[in-house]
Image 1: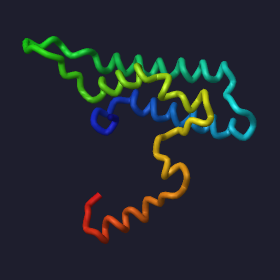
Image 2: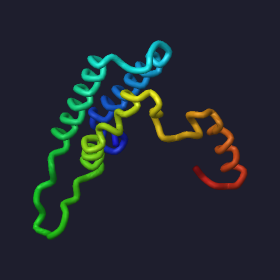
Image 3: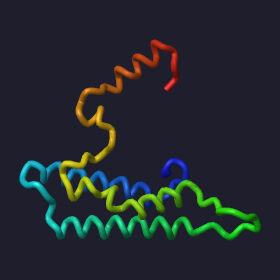
Length: 126
């Protein structure tokens, strides 16, 4: 969304999620959970970023047409981040939940360069 809109809240969200991931990775070596105060702080910052995103993307003006109003990619992303907050931050509460959903990359069995070579050989553009 940042590439499309240039809105800073998207970059702030990426930085926050990567910060949480770094903290979780470090904490995995010591214990099985983050400190509840840390979790509350991360959640507060997450909510603040989502709120700033909504300020940058007000609801669309009512059109004279029938049906749903088109909201735009940024607002749709905000709606998902807001309604799926618990799922987005699940990796922070339960260390068994992976940060991303790409199992091949996280288990180390997938090498992106191998796929790129295969695509080049087969003539498929990536």
